[in-house]
Image 1 (cartoon, rainbow, N blue to C red):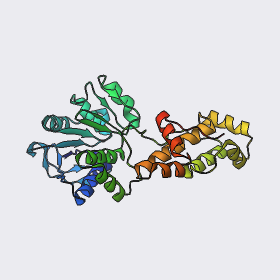
Image 2 (image 1 turned 135 degrees about the vertical axis):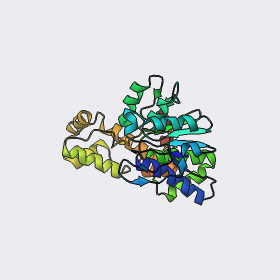
Image 3 (image 1 turned 180 degrees about the vertical axis):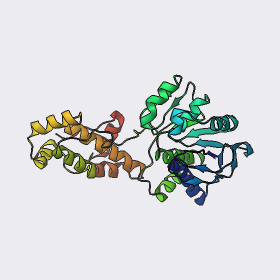
Image 4 (image 1 turned 120 degrees about the vertical axis):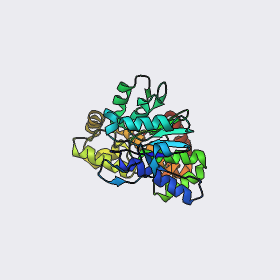
Length: 300
């Protein structure tokens, strides 16, 4: 059951719906209904009119309730939406939210004493508004009992894939992800932003160019000497620029990108050896050690 309202973000609705639709085409037994508090069609934040099947009060049975996000929920969810959640959530096996949908769950008390997440831009606001909630700022999605909350926009797809894995199998969830051309199925504990995305953009062009090269081909030779040669800078000067503009040494930055690339390859179905080789980490044992400690020792 997907509960929509005026101002809902379109992809927060259609992303999970697409996951469930593809899963059904592959044999899953989902029957998804889209409803609104009063049964009227809604208008998304982008202006698209979204049809609904019924009003929340007309729903007989709910297995999983999904509340998608919308910026309007951050400043104060509509009373009718909160009433609909109060009506539908008690009998639901699972209650889930995408992005700012967590603010609606918090407003009706469903997050009290629980861990939760939301879009990275709103984690601080969620923590301020709901003091009894432990906000996981970095997580893609968080499960606490029967309540699942996810980060912003595309994280709703990750959440839906996790539900498919729980309901059906890891294999089916993997096939759904491949059908949707999702590069990787992200685990809940993975950061919301990739290493390049969550790193401040360097001001100096040579450093920017090196970061782009590292992200584009992690397996290339990114030793400190090679990076310095490509940038036309001395080893000392390059190290100082990385530390100043990125907050890390060249080796530790390369290590972070490689570990993230290896994780993506593993989640897309590659073997440990292939992931280690294609990410530039090298051997299976080095990758195992890196995953245990969360970083890879880069070549200097």
